[in-house]
Each structure stands twice: as structure tokens, then as C-alpha cells.
Image: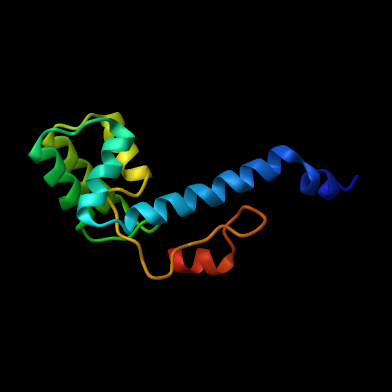
Length: 127
């Protein structure tokens, strides 16, 4: 039985593809924010950030080596340590990193194709 027509016409699959593409775009946009806008976006995600130490930590993590979608373990660990020392909780750290607040965007960012997955070009860029 060929399930391709079912998958292609399935509203849940279409919704997932739309969500995945928009999430990639959201992360990319956050990674390109100015310092002031980056803090504002972090506050939208976490609530008010009153401490200057917390705001400084966000900007320090943004300026670390590595780009979104291409961070290795040591780059993620360095970001986590900076944010943790500043006083962010584990959940807040996860939210900041997963949403591109603590990363930089490359000129060419991975895009999700119409089928909702990365293609071979994207895989090559990740190597």
C-alpha cells in the first residue's frame, strides 16, 4: 500500500511542516537580533530580567564561537556555564539556547524543505 498520498494530504503532517519551518525562521531571526532587541526577546520568553548580570550573560553567550544549528558539545557547554553562573535556571537556559537567543546566525542558515526535513546539502553543512 502506497502511503504517500495519505502523508501528503494529511493535515497533521502539513501542520508539523509549517510549525518546523516557522520554528527554524524564529530561531534564525532571534540569532540576528541587535543586543538591545536580544534582551527584549529574552524577556518575552522568560519574563522580566532585572539583573544586569543576567543581561550581560545573554550577550556573552551570543558572542561565543559557533553558529545556530551548528553548535558542538563544547560550545553548548560554554554557553550553559556562562548562563548558569549568572543565575539562570536549567529550564531558562534551555529556552534561551533553543530559541536562538544565545547564538549567532551564519549567512547561510539551514532551511527546512517542503517535505519538512533537512536535505543532503544541509547535512553536508553540518559536517
